[in-house]
Image 1 (cartoon, rainbow, N blue to C red):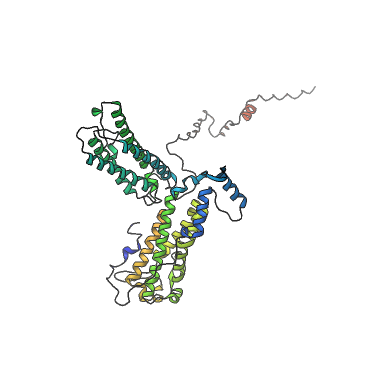
Image 2: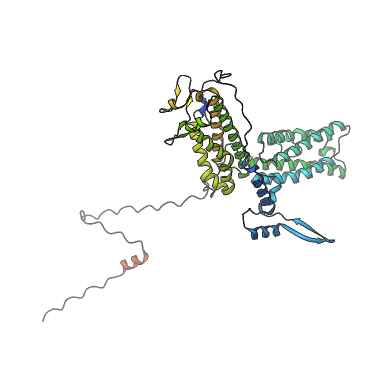
Length: 453
């Protein structure tokens, strides 16, 4: 979002209070996000456990998914059920974590569990090591590993937080190649315990040093995997490689933005009510449509509210990436254009297109209403920006692939023989082999006519 397309850039500085109107009072909206509805939560839980999308009336599919997901055994007079994950349900315990983030989260859980055991088995090899300092560095390393696991298992990763955790553990991660060069908390733990080759004397001490080397290798491997997937995990970051971000984190980001847009719509309604623009007034006040025509202010606010609370989530849930690309994005862009084109007040004049200045009351141009409209427009702009990279289709062609064969160049024209100027040009030989054979076949010479006796 730049200054040129930001609606609030043209607004005058906000005043401390609009003395002509009372204070704004509002109540919390009664519009929960679409994914928080109890029925939808139950459908999602069933789908995650069975690896099967819920469909009304599909009893055979439900029984088949239930039979394939649970194995029943008779043990000592009672039945025990063992759950076997199927398909995408294998990552159900990670919430909305999908794609490369789910792979990183699974690796982090396994590696950090084993790394913690190795960390607890370390003991000092350096004579005169301070036990309290060593335990302090051990606690710092354990805390960093656990926080990395929690962040990677979160539906919406805080990317700067993960970067900072790796920086604390490894020092400068780009220069950390092995256990002897690592810095940060791991390097401090190595120096305090003396986990270097020069202090190793027995096989048992070498085993302790090997445990530390293995611990550092696991953390470095996890960091390299994080760098590979980092640009696609954060849906708020601008894509650098041209690839679309992972769909799971993007859906979580869109759901939060839609909830924020619904709350801001209620804020705008409260601001309008505080300047004596009530529900009946909102239904008759006309606002311009940048695509042509006009609509009522109340109709626009209901459209935004319905899209943020129900329609937007339904489009994503029912059709996935196709729903975002073919329907969700178009509706969000249309609403963003209409809200961004609402009449606004500038420093020197009322910037109102057409004759809408006469139909809108002065309270519409108060600072509190204009700021509420600007915040709603910012939320819609962010929704459009997050949803725009989502595409469903084949990957674009690789520009580094083999080049296409060059087109054949036509043969140069044959100059006419001397003395044949003005005659018709010879016809080029046909490219068809059969036609070429027919053209080169010797024609029979005509028989001479009989001479009269």
